[in-house]
Image (cartoon, rainbow, N blue to C red; front, side):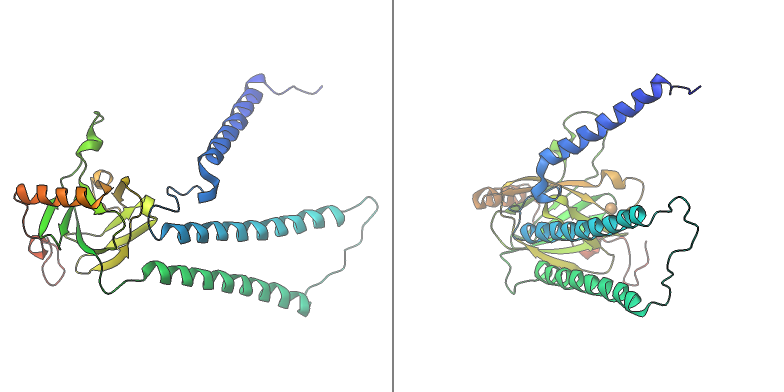
Length: 282
Ligand SMILES: [Cu+2]
């Protein structure tokens, strides 16, 4: 006699399937057009092409997947072992045309992906001679220093303490950027390796002691975005957070003025680094 499966197991399955469906559907509801990236095409001058590249890669991968799965399923069904069939099927090892085909096709596919990747990287990494603004960012265990070089003012962040209380987000170090201006970032570290990441900008770069990594971006949409360290950098790595406020030019100038009035004049440079010129940590 067949044992019916216990009701608890079928219920578990139903819950799992419903959960997966709900997650899938709510995911679809957020934004398929951005490929579920935490951004949209208008956030910076570069998010549009990054999203297009991401989505294009998914479409290409899915097309290849469907073709391969289709061929596999077709072969499984058509060439399955039938009753009274005890002979080996035709063996095709050392079939040169076939082997050439499955060598050449993947090379062509990787080549196409390479060309599109290279084009996108070149465009995203492109820098102009004369940025509108230069911000020097230092990562430090476990916060951030922002030097607004053109205004000769600075902001020195402190570690966020995630105590579970409300209102922590309001106290995060905030990086102010004027909308529609080309900002150059000079990215550095005071101690160990960190990574400067603004998910909504779809851009992340390493902060390496003794090195400066630069990039430029034009934020094109006012708003407040989250930033974080994306390189495990010690005990309080998870509290190395900041906010990015993309504001109007007037608001930006007012914030620079506020820093000046608070006495934050000048630049917090390499003299505050924790390693010496040989790169050894002090
Ligand atoms: Cu860090």
